[in-house]
Image 1 (cartoon, rainbow, N blue to C red):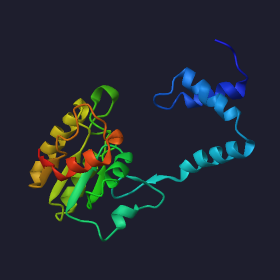
Image 2 (image 1 turned 90 degrees about the vertical axis):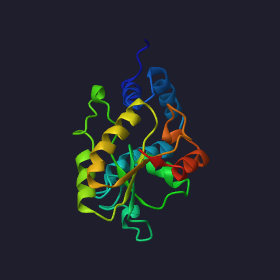
Image 3 (image 1 turned 135 degrees about the vertical axis):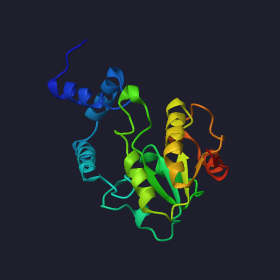
Image 4 (image 1 turned 120 degrees about the vertical axis):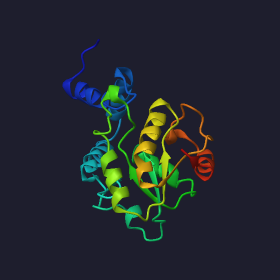
Length: 199
């Protein structure tokens, strides 16, 4: 492989850490950056650096800039329904449907012991403590992608949550098997939320 100047090589190595970015894509992105003006490069660099200001909400573990996120502090939202999602980005997808007005909880992934995603590595115990401490929560929606790891997570959480007598529901099968919530259109996801059923 051709050797590039160190700055180019460093940017390629950094970009290769992103999911789905291999050496060729990293090289293409790097050369696109080289064609940008110094102003645009500086703007991109500052935007990336500002990600250091993002923290997780102490209530729901979603990404936010404040100790408690906007959704958790919104008094207009339903207090008795909690939607559990794998990642913080799933919240934006569900919010785009305008079909849900409750609160959220970010598990931090799906159960996948091979990759190290065990109950201890995720926010499972924090979820259980939240349900113990808040008897107002009458329904927990398990909003996970219907793949193998999503199904495993749903089954595990259903068993853990049943001890509280709290109703657990899942997204309706409007989502095809193997689909990813992040890439599902709003209409399909909205129908899935409205047609949810017991686990």
